[in-house]
Image (tube, rainbow, N blue to C red; front, side, top):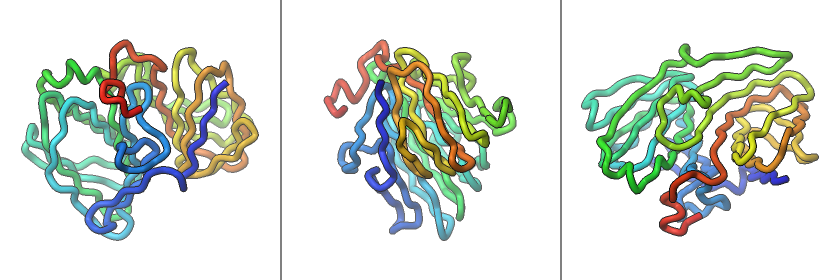
Length: 252
């Protein structure tokens, strides 16, 4: 059984524009200094927010990766060189940039907004030669199911609703009000959980808002909910069927 807990205070920090945008990074870049390095086909995961005012991250390039933004609170604005216009994304919306051969983008976080930005590796050796693309998905398209005090929002399951090329990625959001919940763990997969609010006890350890958990090699896992809890989950393969960027460059 493997359960790894990365408390909020040991995650890498980041900021833009002299602190107008702040970041905690469960999975940071090598130079960020965080404890956790890329694994599976998850290369980067940042929780970013604009606490006091609107702030814009200027135009910058990407190649190869699938870069997804999940709007957790408020709204953001996005511009890229493919669309050549600004668009607005609101709470619950999801954005997918397939960077391919290359694309540049800029993003504005409105005051009080929060996002996850997560980079997936779609087989970087091949994706660097594919034309870039952009898509976004409005919050209302994502299915929610309520059962016995547990609400599950499916952003992408094995049907791949958001069209990722990265192998085996599934994305869910859970709200749990029941005091005890048995979480199903898939074989040969990592389950990566970010605690968005509340707290829970897992393997006799308390985890709180902002903490990050990686679970694998477990059949079922009992979660004890001491306060109403909300968490974001990504399921990814233990062994993707291709060499990832992190493996190629020996940074995991």
